[in-house]
Image (tube, rainbow, N blue to C red):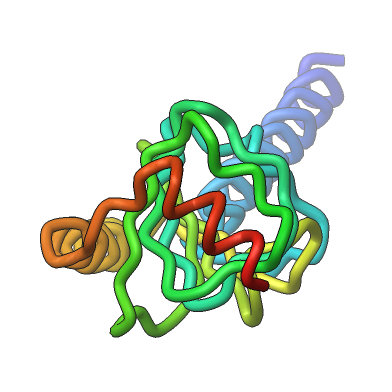
Length: 151
């Protein structure tokens, strides 16, 4: 009887150790990617949005957004938002405190894009935004209204 109990205990132990190793290896291999594609997103997902827009589409913007824009569509509601114009802007992305959304086209709802949390990329995008912000010309309310009426 002692031999049978020993063999059963040994088998249960081997199976338990095997399962523990297998489960431990799964956690190591399931690291979250630093980037991922998306076609469904919301600007509400981004805290303190800072936007670089070569072409700004129609999108509802939070009042705490900062925008550097080359051109934008008629009817954009920019009143009450910090907006600057810079003719040298290339690219479209939205920076947040901990992530960035890089878009394949104009900044408009559900445009194809890539989310990234990669630190090096965020640092480069923040530097580009800050440099562009410093070189850009502020849009005042009258200019915003005139620009919108021209388009």
